[in-house]
Image (cartoon, rainbow, N blue to C red; front, side):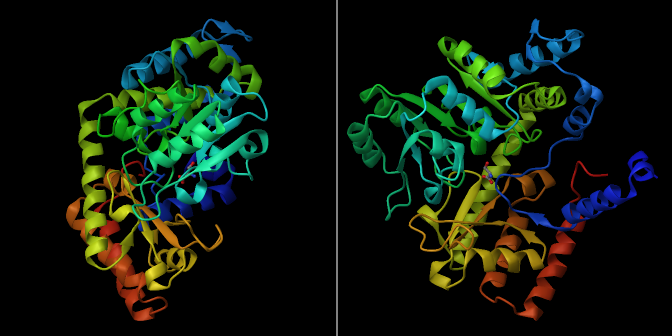
Length: 413
Ligand code: DSN
């Protein structure tokens, strides 16, 4: 019996159920992954007990010598990984990293450009339901209706018209390479700063399988738990000139005490990402996404932009007359976990949506390769084109169970 079981049987029972769910389902959520046991060990450690407001060698508390060493190590590693001039590893999550970047560069009410949510952007890139849209005057840009790709000419026209102080690039549901150099050129034309939120593609960037934004952007924000496969957390990179603005925007402006256990887990994540095997993993993520996209298309589905260059595919369900919500729920009934997702120019609400987003980081960590991706594509298409067919669902559930049995989740005993 585990210690947690002895202390809190109720919570322990729920954890066991979640463990079972993770083991017995295929996770195609593009923003999720299975982190390593080493990351889990650091994250679940006694470091959670330590207060360390401030930065290495400038803390507001005593007893910080080891915490200083941990944070310094994380900083050194993340700067090496992304060839960055300055880093801050204290933001608790992606939304906080973005908030700190805005605080560092903007005054309330300033004009900013960001990719709109339905076109693949993130809520914190200006959506009215978040602090970003409430605090700043966001001008949304998006993708071209025909190509499904970012319309850089339209971005430039909007920038010339609105003269934003900041342009935000980066996305949560965009399957193509982002041209950061072009974004820089547009920003320069209107003397705007450029911020890139690379959360989704950080792992690919770390190994050079997606062009890096670091030389072009004034500030780069990222989470650590997506393709980067670390703990649920975030960090910021910036040019040396902005170091003070970023550090003071994170603490004390936005956050209090850093989560030292999360910083330690990030240090482990960066160490693992610096190893040659991380390239092999990211290459497999891309290969798997390409096979998934090719197979889904071959089986008749419509993919936004016609395919993928990265770790995710976005399926437009409009031609088959299915909503994102119904597709997500049907897939979940057979053990395939995805998220419904708005598509560009969606006519349905963000609760229902006309699309689903599928990603390969988690299944690749689990060991799935091209054959398994083909099987998964077949299952996905069969389920969403036969909603509520109990026979097909039963058969799919069996195949999912068989696949999950062959590929255990590496970090779960
Ligand atoms: N919510 C995340 C995603 O699923 O893409 C982004 O923060």
